[in-house]
Length: 442
Image (tube, rainbow, N blue to C red; front, side, top):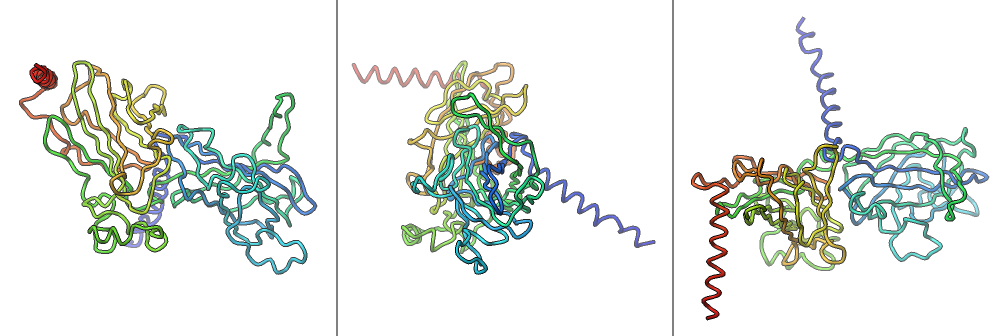
């Protein structure tokens, strides 16, 4: 009978593992976010077909930055890639069986990457050749698409004989994405440029890829620190937020920084070992500072600091969740868009850099930070500085949730103070400053 006592734990463990995995892939701030890969067969060839593959990023705030996406799959039978436009397979494989024309790729499991900008026009198609960089949908839907054309041989030549590829994988650029199987869908309909005629693909199938932060890394990739004008205490990022420090995984001295920061640093060292030694060991820190209090408004300063000496963050995004964001009045130096995943909730917003100004967060160093200030209008029915209300509920950087301090560590409002008194003291300080300046002018 003792056997039956332990008969259920293993199935239950497996069940809960699946549930946790699926929960990690679900993002409550972007419940419908995914990357959809669509294959449209545009024409049949004597031994296969020509298809246009379109990758669309429907994630509201998670983009694919440099060095870009990598797409892989496994052929169902003995298919080969005769040609590609707008992308290339990273390996040709063994094509020794072919005489005369040699395929572009003969591997059973090809791996495909986008072409770099500036390739000849005869190697380009629409939405290709951006080095695999794909914007998030909210940031710029026009650049949230990447496409390439592939000519497939030794394949079926009709809707009934084509075999769909299997086991799709997507790196964007790192781990974290899980892709569904290919599924036949109604053929894509295209509109001619003059808008007077519709055409359609001969056959279409979709693959849906979703992101799971747990699969991407065992640790977060960012953390949050806090401070305020009403308390001199600075709440740092939690210790070991992104792993703990040892002698081999970070840079501590100026001499070591000089020795590794150079033209070939990314080739010679692992970027994970190029992070400045800190108590949190995160490549990114977001600092939220409650700066000022006015009669009807309050002001916040946000600073994003890069501690990674081997990486620039292009087209970075920052998402904040706070109940007062529905009353945001002005944002300095950043672009801002509200995120509305649910009809009756407006407490989440996305911040990102101004194009050609601060849309690149540079590597660690003097220029490795970006800053913004927010002015928010008070809702007097809910506004307070008590119990950490002025600090964000969640922060995401580049789509990954950041490690937050424990609520009891937030900068607290002194017992002798309240919001009204703070407002009065702030105004008094301002008036004293103006009076002193006037005296200086006399």
